[in-house]
Image (cartoon, rainbow, N blue to C red; front, side, top):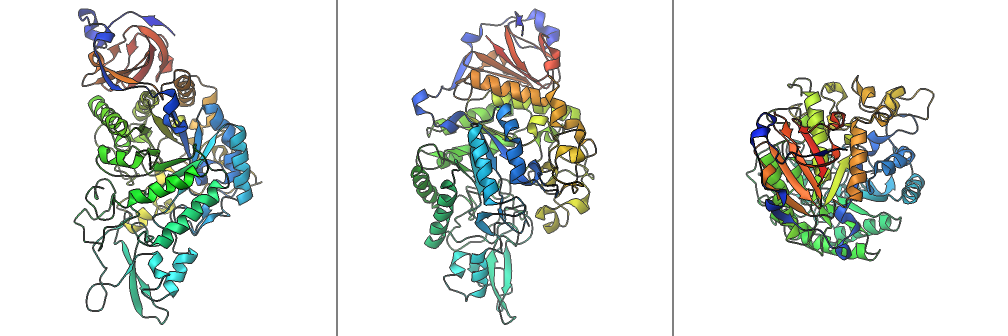
Length: 587
């Protein structure tokens, strides 16, 4: 730590010729601190996403499992997170990595048993970690008993009414009921074959053809999912992250839609226009779910994966009687740009403050290119779900990881809740040279390879540099190869290697999370320090902590203050903020 005297963030070449007014005279209030008696635990939480099949393999079959997660929960507690969010581990044919659920109340044998889940919960509780699980209410697997019953039943039957079946268009019904497209490419409709071999009705699937959409106009669907909520709440879970929360209800009549055919939820089908997204009746569903959670006490949480535009409309999901949180996709998709970041932070705080909620912040997840790779591009970064492959221009990875560290330090100082995706604390990039014959994301197959999909961000984690599969797999004399191949240099990112390096990504995250809690930044305030906000720099004050980010190419002179954390810790007491660096200063 060190104390400096210069007063203004300016290019270092001109610092000597510049003076500035005191910070206190140039602050723009944006967000006020949350009163202690109004906080839900999630208001300032840091929630760590675990993607089970890629987290830790305890039995050597090449796929992560619940027992593997339990083995490493202590590492997450030591990191300083408040909760873990588990992506799906339910019974599933695994056509979409578990988001095609065949039984919502069973653990898939690939991941273990209900006993393994109970052990995980007990261990998490002993470590002071809350557990949130994924819920997938828009669709299920075509192997689910309810859908199999629907296929065997007649048109118009109660069994078929659990899903969205329609007669086809044209004289022989050979055309889909409307022109909707799947998120994964191709039509959103698949035609059935009757028991006598004749062609029958069509069913809707906004995702893969093996993932039929439920019919949320049917009260029986509501009853079924309330049963599922209670099943897991009875087993102690602390809440649910609701997958595709914006898509359950479709517009009456299922009208044609003129959006782009590839089916992206934010780009092709803006949530405020599309007939398959953001319908008003959704809010009644989540009001009821909030009542169900309330039966289990005040600390349970609902988080919406609600990809709707604009931010003010996303905030409708987190009014006091609905969700506690909604993923902030506009923040996730913002590039490494000071003006763009200022705009999205201010817009987010304004929108969520207006409904008495706190914003969330997130840089990576299992559906997008990791930010260490995204930020390695100087121009357009890959679109969500497209992935990066060997045929594309490769990112500048050292630059991407440096920007990722700066972006992470900046994000962790913001008031509100943060979501971390497994491995980002190691600075992991995407696997950008993944062989096409190893890809498993249905997006790749459904688009004939035009969209590479999300496999690159789902590579099994490196735990120990000198072990098989970088320590991902244990429990067998000859462990199987990981379900997705790891890059050749994966050992260099291993957790045990980084644990001994004070300049590592892991050390950066551990230190920042510790300080975030001590300084109460998550429930703090935010004021822009105007004299430090330029085209290439951004600064805000949260309590007595000044946070500065340099997105430009020239170093900047630091203002006075004691260094608390910097994203390039190897610079030590340097009085300059380097290009693509962030810093926290105590004033």
